[in-house]
Length: 276
Length: 278
Image (cartoon, rainbow over all chains, first blue to last red; front, side, top):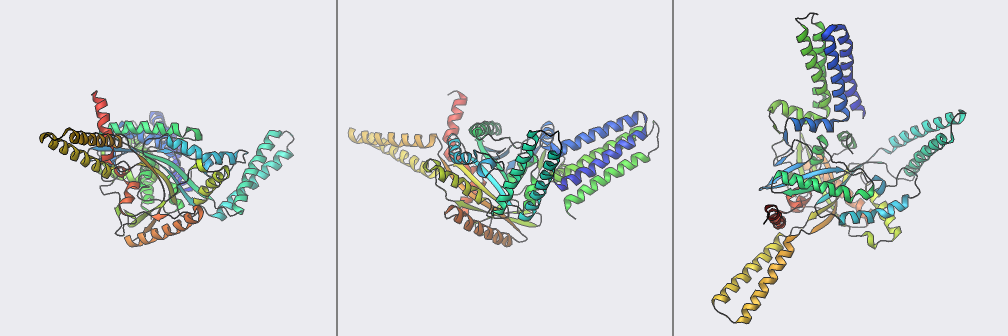
């Protein structure tokens, strides 16, 4: 959760806190009912904050609400696709999370097989694509981060780990496993520092897949889309990455990305924090 | 103050005001239902306040339209810039222009040595650091538009059929009729082979956006970023990227250009025949 999200959540949480306090002063049945409302409000806030991508499509499905994000397009109640009707032919577009960070960038973890993994990546990619016989897109949205800020952030993390290490070494009851784990973390942080020192720019990246299916009816297009999504999940399963279908507001955001991208890193990071 | 913030403050303020109102209602069985109702409304307003952070684009139209079909926008999602090299969208008072840069990469992993493969993966990671602003790199597999080719084949089939009819009516020599029949079979087979399954093409491109208070400002700004991107990609990959213009932009944006209708019409017919049990 970012700073803005934290402020929003804290402000709304204060309301629930006050409601709980006041409910006890109401007394009797009224107090119990108000306390129950407070509990439901707290659950609602938590759901809205951390699982809105489950709650929102659930509500629109129950009430059968359809959205029109732009002229000629519609988002069905399940909120899992964008449908366009072109002269009686329906095109359904869906999105999948697909973070291939470990394959496209030198991984943060200090792994022995890192080069081997990078070496195999282009071939695996081609093999996965060759297995597909439908239209799809793979997107990497990246933005540069402030080098100084990232450096300070990493230095802070390293100092904390070093403090943990010295404390663990002073403590006689600490096992070797704990010390090895802290050392591993320090190595990972150090390797990130080294990369920045070598001139590599830190970035924030977002990766996702998009596929479009067609059909003579909306249902046919959506069914075909579901099939294509499953095929994509199978084709890219060899990469050992999480391929989840994107639903809800993030689907709407990604739809808009074909016409306008975020222009700053802040815009990019505040749009996504639930899925992927 | 930002609109989103105003709505949040209004909603959270209303929820607190309702809570104070509920507290100020005197105790007693007569007032209890009012108290519970006010607390319930306050709790709903509190949740709505948190939702307004992400769902403002929906909350407002839902409140205004109160229907099951909610129109978030009734305008085209974009329009092409007069220069034909960017697509434009109006968001509030600002225009956001987006440019697409085609990256001609035709290398295959099967032709690379192990060192080249690692170098290629490193080049890809370098690409993402070219600009500080967000840049989207995409690989797109789309259905080739074979409309013109199919139309030419259909014309050839029609022509051969006409010729066959003419020759048969004129009771021409058997050899001539056989030759035209052969041609007709050839064109028909070719048409069937071309239109029965779609052909795919793989393209790589980058896209970038920029804002401006005037259309031309946004377009100029995005074209400048596209220029920087082209220079960066060119130096990293050693290729010559170009800004995509005109109708070519549409295959990155519109689904009907990603999968052209007439190219897939045969496939649709086949599916319908199968579904119908013909």
